[in-house]
Length: 148
Ligand SMILES: [Zn+2]
Ligand SMILES: [Zn+2]
Image (cartoon, rainbow, N blue to C red; front, side, top):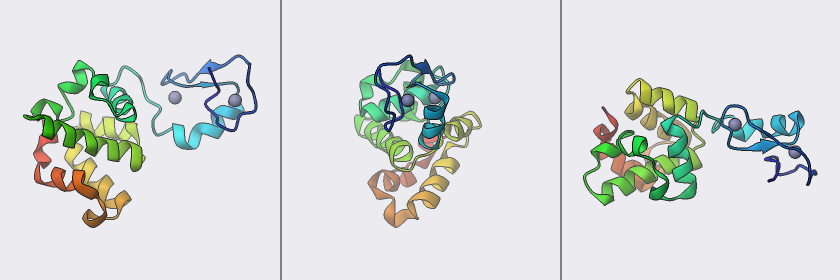
């Protein structure tokens, strides 16, 4: 086990788990603070479906998806493997490349506002449809797939 802070000089020391996500470990409060910038957006309760979504896209693997995820976030409406792959790629773009905040994504899902959240995130962070790539173009034509 390593401290989540890549610049941490410590090698063998007692590490403590991040109390919210229980997904990464730190050796000290200082290292926790050093990671805050990148970690706070993906630090979320592991029981939430969005945590599994984040794990799946970082693993780049459908097999990591649990049953709750397959039955939500629009995946339940995908009729073909092609659609599933496109939707998965869309979330990968949102989480991995646009650094979307998982707490905001979870909130949008709970409030049934995923389409609004996805479109506004791609527009504001990617700079409009021209720079959004193929997954987003597909999504614009299938926007209600994320509407419950
Ligand atoms: Zn450390
Ligand atoms: Zn955390």
